[in-house]
Structure formats: structure tokens, C-alpha cells
Length: 294
Image 1 (cartoon, one colour):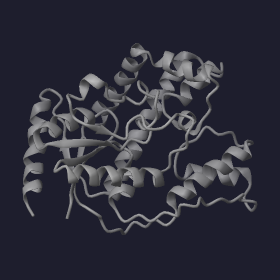
Image 2 (cartoon, one colour):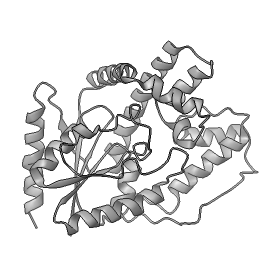
Image 3 (cartoon, helix red, strand yellow):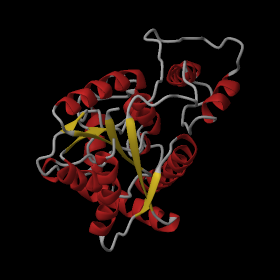
Image 4 (tube, rainbow, N blue to C red):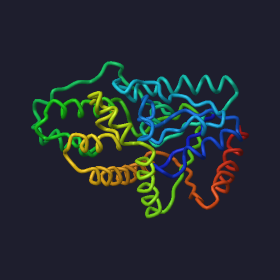
């Protein structure tokens, strides 16, 4: 069976750095598995890898869609499998890297989707009931009186969930590497990371989108973007906006842990931030055995 490496875990633990260092060791090519990094122009807020950080390693499915476009899990499933097959044909190792768990599962397991999108007006549900259904899946800032957006969001959830089961057969021989660290340390990393993003120009990146009057799904659901839109709309202060980005990023990390712990067979590695090379070598040792075993 074709072998695929996955590097995942919560935001901020070093997935990107590990992926490049491992790719150099195992003749790998990297496939993006972050739902936001497929969009052009969403760079700082998504912590997208910079060109100079790629170290000559091929990277795929980054910057492939305009921010106005609607890119679904169904789209990603098709694109990721094409890239996996292309990479394997080159006798290289596909390495999926990112924290979007559903994207990873859809690409690597026998998920079945209908190409035609499910749509319902939910006439039997009140606005409050629709909002409660959405909140079972993720946090949202959609106002309870905005029925049109509520319906659109719940339909998106239904489309992402349709024809999927928890019991699925993998299409590849998969090794899932999960990076982790102490929760308090992770939260400190996330908070500092947001401050670094602000210093690197996150406000300018978001303001440019705001001035173009872009209110696409990617913007209005992306952490770092939706919060700063509130600031530019004069709904909250800049300080409150940045604190909200940190809070939402920490909550997202919690949800990522929950997903990975219950939905995937992950080999967890505690990151040694004082000597990251040691973490790389620990992971490489296990991957090397996985790749040579039939």
C-alpha cells in the first residue's frame, strides 16, 4: 500500500519546521493540510510558510484559491489525492502537514461525498435553534437575527458531514505524527505568536482585505481576520481584538486536541523546544522504520 506521512497537532507546536526538516531526510514533498492556507493573501494570519523557509522542498496546495472562492473539504479531498499520487509516482514521500483534521481524514480515508451540495431552508427550526446546531460544531459570531447567514452556515456544516462515518478504511499506509507540549506552554506560545503576527504586519494584511470590502467565508471564519474586522468596523478596540484572537486561537487548539485524540491514530511526540533537532531525530527514527517496512 502507498505510504503517506502526516504531521499534525495544535496550532503553534512546530509542524511546519518539522515537516521541512523531515522532508530533507526522507526525500519528501509537503502537501498543505490547513484549510486557511489554500487562500492567496492570507499569509501572516495563517502563519503560512515563507518562501525562504521551504529550503527547496516542493510545497503543494498553498495559495491555490482566491479569498473570494469557496473551497470545500470535497474539493480538498480531490486535490490532495491527486498530489499524493503524483508525488508517489516520483518516488518521493507525500507529507501532509496541518491542523485541519477533517481535511486530513477526507484525503486519506474512504470518505464519500456527494458532488451536489445538500441544501435546506430549515423551515422547522427557529433562528435560535439553528444557532444552537451550529454551536455544536464550532463557535460563531453570526447574529441570531441574521437567518440567511445562519442557514448558509448550517448547510455548510451539513455538506461537510454528509456521507461520512467514523468507521472508514484508509486508502494509504499512514503514519500520523502529532506534536504536543504542555498546555500552559502551548498557550504561552500561541499568545506570543499572535504578538509576533501583529509586529509582522497582520493589521495591514487584514486592513487591505477590509478596504476591499471582502466578506467571504474564509475571512469571516478565519481566526485573526474575523476579530480584526470587528476592530476595523469599530465594534471593539484593537486591544480587545488582539485578545480575542489569542482566546479564539487557544480554544481552537483545544478543539484540535479533542479531534486528534478521538478521530485519528496519532503517534504523539512531546516537542523539545530547547533542542528541536532532538524532536526531529526521534520522529525520523520511527518514520525511517515505517518507510522501509513492507
